[in-house]
Image (cartoon, rainbow, N blue to C red; front, side, top):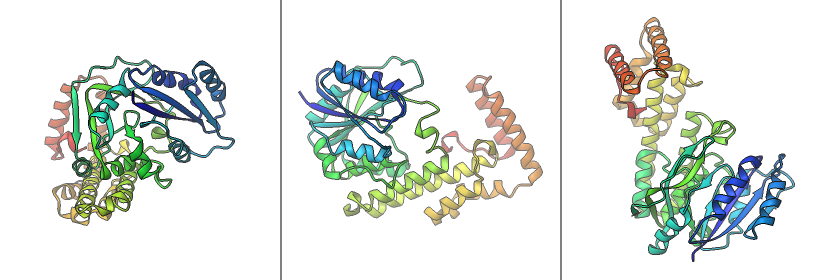
Length: 357
């Protein structure tokens, strides 16, 4: 049987910890070892940890005397990996039934695959039903997978669904302390630079909890904050494992172009929906131009200029209508609202396809 080391960093998540660890211990078809690192939680995390250790010998616990932060905690756990594969599972997330067996089966069949991921399920409180039967697997050359990520500028992986081959994880080392928001994205790309990437199809591999106190909703919130974090992740990758790739400059250029276009389209949207962001469109425009100066010649940039130069009175009227439409959207069927919004956008000359946003 393949053996999997699961690192569970925990800070003030005692209320979620037991359910998280049980989702790991109940995995079948693999040998699991759980390492919980309590980063000096002020709640009753130590009590939950003691209970879990008494219940199952596969659970180990380290407690910090002072809070060190999530990146230092991750890297401490990575330094202690034992087993064939490694999973970083936040204490507020869970694995689905059979997730580790499905992922490791793919990697056992394809020794060049350094990481496997799958479909996560987002939830808040009650666990929705998960698909546990795989319909197959996909394997990409690492560079081809990197190209797709660079072309989109997006991170395709949440985190709990990723399973990494231990030898690959040890080869690239730990997380970058300078990337507290986008360290995961940088890690996936660094892995792809030196190995192939696999994906389990058809089955749900993990549960990703969405709640108001998560870092993504507090210290790491904000659209522009996320764009800046993604750019720093790409920049770091192409200074490390990606630096020696023959197509390094092309891939980095694709990433900057994608992020710049995303920023411009966001700025364009904020001209009519300013209440969706605390930042003005100019912040996004400046960020886009700094990444990819050629964007000033694109249709998206000209559309933004046109929107910013409109008469302020007319702009105020449009924004007022947009606010009412946003409120109305909560009570109107989605398809009907789409038609209303499309017709209004055609009337005002501001139509852009939804996927641009």
